[in-house]
Length: 169
Image (cartoon, rainbow, N blue to C red; front, top):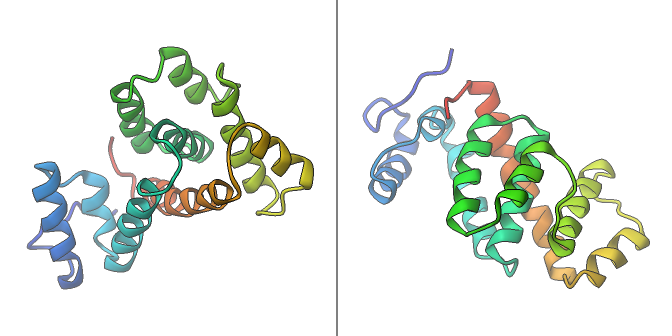
């Protein structure tokens, strides 16, 4: 039901963002082409995901947050894209498999961020002191806890939009 917009067919407010995405990636991914129907959503997702990418969480920890969201929300687009990112970051196949299967990660620190992400979602942010303490004891900071919230926000937009628009991977 949603169309894959081109730069020419997109609402005017989405055209610059689409053109910049196409220039940066060498193509316009179908998820972006469909999200362009709402320039506000497209800009909101791209800006919030860029902010998340600039956070103090290390790249693999960020990908754990994203993959936790992607698998929880059954977003095949994000699972495919971020599996590739994890492999490019040299995350082990056991990490990728565990994230895909939604099972505990073999690395204590990565498992701490995965379980913290799930607990933030389960409690709508009202994590208890023991949960926050466990996260901090795994080497993360209060800032990182809030950065997890940023990642959840960005990838809630993406995963839900990709599912609603039936964007292909």
